[in-house]
Image (cartoon, rainbow, N blue to C red; front, side, top):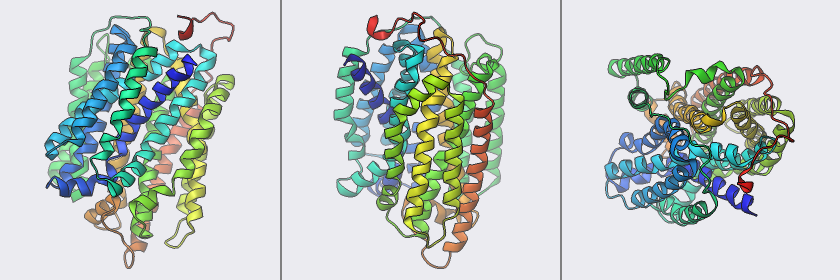
Length: 478
């Protein structure tokens, strides 16, 4: 019973932080109108959240290694819940963005340490099952966020997309204090302040200019800003090789299985979350469905993913992560192939079938890949590696949003594509065929990105799982 309650807290934490990475999407037009601001500025309620998580996750995982994972994890719940309250009470767009930053710090604490807590709590031959349960939270949360945002914004108002976190956060925080209180083996490690600043500045420059290009088109200043951001990121990574405890531990990439698994997560996140955005654009812009009806068509796939995740985790415990994770990527690519056959008059059952294929693939990939990463991390670096995994996955999420709008806009004016994505306009009529070209181009790009994840996953090598008979002191015994 104790283990089940611990898993419940971990699933709730992962789901809450994942939901809030996308829950704002369908509420953007309403927030823009209610707070009397611009759509371009409101977009930063999403980007600021993703940026903070991408930059802070590794460091907060390392902080968990140093002062105790449970302490950081439970504090994350508290900050996330307080941030949610402030978001719902926001009187202005700048207050809302600032509150989202606080919320993201809490989400970073949760995400960075959840994988490490599992590695501490469960013996190696049982971690895959645990990751299967937590993968439900992450896999389903990011897309359910879109549905929840549509339902709550439509029925009771956009502020309730944040208020809904309050009772959940309070329950999870209380349970976390009671049941997640083992701190694991502590190893004091200095934080990489310079690396954090470099990564943050570089990502902000790339994201700021990327969002401007996606919404308004290409101009010289934005191109220069993107270039400068890439230079800052490259310089930061080069510097990371020279310090003892970097934000991006380049030494971790010397382990082929570990590095290929982490990189596969990055490219999977970029490639497949983009597909969700693309399909919603198709349903809203070409088929004329409401944002809520569009998102509801994707639910069957995520129900499948939720149901199969734990069983796929058990499978990865038995056979290792490479085969299930690689087959999962193949299933996602098959889903992209089905989506590619869509026309302006295709049956909605085609969308449902593709979402089910993708859901099966997600249920295979997430628990197997996460388990593979932690199986190849050293005990003293669980927090740092778990944080690095989430950092790269969140960077992929951030990239997928900008990429989707930019690529789809090759067929129609950028502002039209931007409004379609937000659900404020549709393209029924003369330009739907042209926009379909943009959608298919987006899908081809996503398939190409997923193919990189496929190769990395297949070539990662077979990790050596510790024997079931090894004397591992589990959390419940400690």
